[in-house]
Image (cartoon, rainbow, N blue to C red; front, side, top):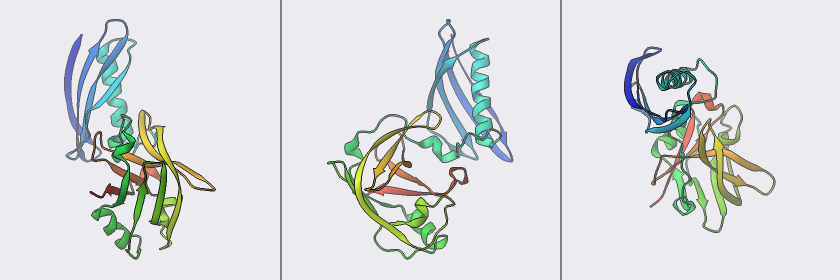
Length: 215
């Protein structure tokens, strides 16, 4: 059985809508697609699957309601709005190889909020699995996301890391000589060109740095 619906409303004071397509297999399983928009900002289409106890319609309703609660913060599951754009299909590592630099918006944030002196800021991912970090703002590795106006540089190994958020998403794991950063840097977008998403402090704050690959 296949059906779809659109549910508009508000989330807090913001306009909210979700669109769902659902296929019920007749034996308790449901699969489908969902897309969510809050204040005019829409996610990409998100595949989902699960099982139903009463009916496919009830399952879809509960799924949408649960997502709305997650977005509104009623359930503290650590999901922040931008995380819905994390890459869900494993990227080709070659699409990540190259030199990554802060976006213009991130440079502005570094200057205005971090009071950093702007110079050369790069994360270089090499095809042989090594990386070089040049002048990463020190708030990237501060649990409170506080700027001390300093920078961190280093060398090490990198690889793709499969994270759960709560569904599967992909991150870049950085292995420095003395420690490993497994899920600080997530991949964003569902196809190239990707962005690298560096969480600053509490993930629920929404404070991030975005890096784009130089052409």
